Length: 378
Image (cartoon, rainbow, N blue to C red; front, side, top):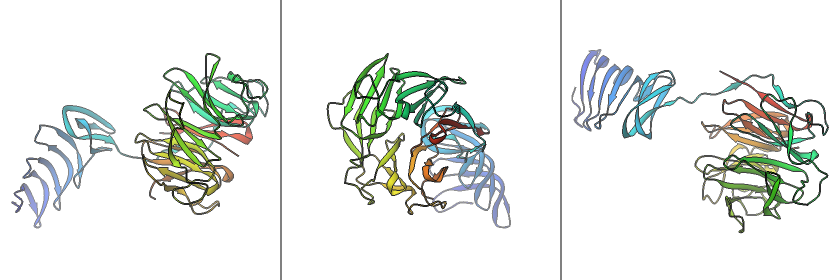
């Protein structure tokens, strides 16, 4: 079979359709050898590109699948070698085998990994925990709000250790007043805290303190891969970004900043935030009962969760707070007043969420004064 665009097919035929095995010689010098069904790649086969790169996989309609898909994303080629596995074969610009997106599931019965011993200030207790951060060793850092402290629970520990404050609340630099969120700068092992009632962002390292940002009604903190610090301001209804180490300026507005409201360029009581690899900002727009996504340098956001009024239906949220996005763009929201965690696929009082490296989901169960872990089911 020779097409007008000079593509050539040489193979077995059945009922006037390509059916069976054969080779397609494309005019652009690509060659596919493998199974065919009704004019489409179907079954095991090999695609060879002009630069010598190859992808050996099961094919369906021009897509390679072996529990994987070939995407034009990376600098070195890939060869599917089995389910969810890929071996790089050459240096070139073209497809490689990527794990096919899947919907993760978690056990419905959680494990209490922090607290769970009633409300209190002992080292095995919490008092309205809010923001949480999980490091690479699965140590858990908690903004223990009404105890005015940041505590760290080592992996599988039965009690925590105080790493910031623990004194009576005041506004001295060595004290906290209702801290609400915490992140760890793992490059220099410092703790960065949203010190809500003191209206500041403060860094603790080796029991020394440094005020990074003053006069800000901060609720949420996060840091991107380029070490930019993002902070939400509940009263100014905006999210700003600072370059790490450069805080003697007003920062750059990356979401909101157009007054309180429900327009796409506005926010209303923004809370926790998440930033993806493209520097898109996801922010829980709490009083608007929605989650907004602001792409880098965008002038307005898009609604990616909620936005259908306050309520408990599956298309609604009620005072959303914690928000996190996985590698497949699926959005997880702590739907605070509905007492649930929701997953939203983009395009289709306070608590926080976090994942560890294995995909287990951690939830700050504030009013039960504990951190719950929902284990992923493989």
